Image (cartoon, rainbow, N blue to C red; front, side, top):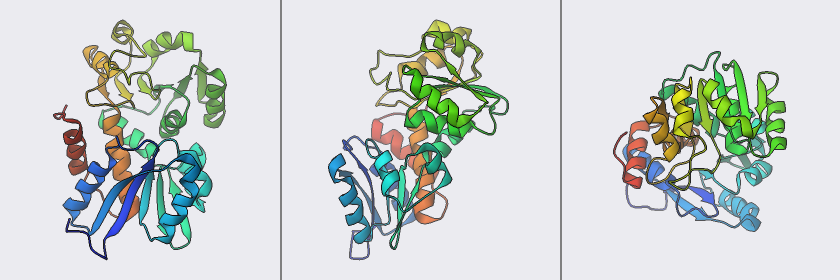
Length: 282
């Protein structure tokens, strides 16, 4: 990537807070690899300023934005066009600017699906336990639709789980939170989407539960400098597992495809993510 000049294209990630984001490291590594005259930055924008920020980016000719918390719903509302995936989740994490049009997509769905497949998950007819019913939980459920035999949804707030179950349809059922461990024992695939695990000492499922489980693949969408306790416990129980860093890379690769209409250098992006958190390849 050459020094920025008058022809340099601008992209970025917008959130609040956003300084912790790994997206600039991941996306700029891809831009350098492909020799593009473009730069990817992080934009810290408070919720009250989000709409005017997007209008400014459109007017300035920005190529595209990734969107993180707390703006994904607001991004959905300001886009002039949204994809089917964004419509289903009612959340946008990737915006592209095409003249007066602002097109919204949700690449979290494909990021989850591809991560599960990379882990070797057999989704056809599987019993998939989705823990959490927020935006990430909706993405995980959507990623499993069309292949899973059953989608089980567990959430501390039953009403949110019921809402997601209604969106998924008859292949889904709600698991009461107190029955989470029992469901985990019977699940073929587990996707954890809540914030439990941000602390290295926390885990939503205990080792003894995972050791009894039929689960073959577990994806924890939480990530940090080190792998989460849930991932380490799952691997100790013989389950193929990955944390949210793997999914972050793959959803970012999907966004790269959207921005540039070409394939993404996934391995370059993966290595940039590992380098940014100081990890070796698992």
